[in-house]
Length: 157
Image 1 (tube, rainbow, N blue to C red):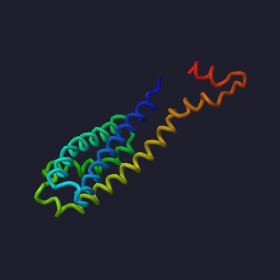
Image 2 (cartoon, rainbow, N blue to C red):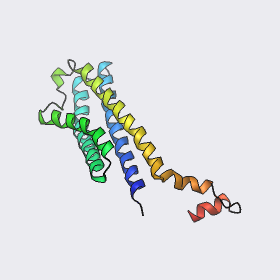
Image 3 (cartoon, helix red, strand yellow):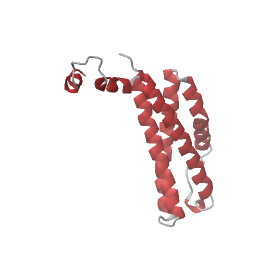
Image 4 (cartoon, helix red, strand yellow):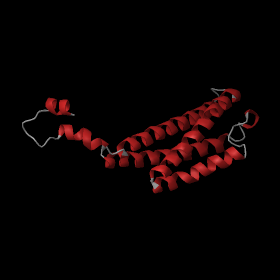
């Protein structure tokens, strides 16, 4: 059995997790900007998901490396380096007292990261299609044998 389609589905799920974590941070910053949240709530919400985002992105990059997908590994490497550098300098958490000073910069950074993750989402989706996961599903509906109907194709699947 070829594990390539399963691997791309794992990449898809990891990418969806990264998009969700990033959207959560953008929404928290937007709520702070609109004064729906106080600085403490917003900072604590964002700080709780920063480490899981960094770990998930690191696992995402390492899995690309271990599976031999060099283009995707090299594409995710700069963002992983930025995350690692921010973590090592202890700049990854948002300080409650300085949140309004860095609000626009942090929001723009997360929007750029969201764009990057959405680009990876499109690339991963095309690779899922190329790996054949959808071709197996579509073969149920496009049978070469005319005498089989859809019910027998699904039962054989």
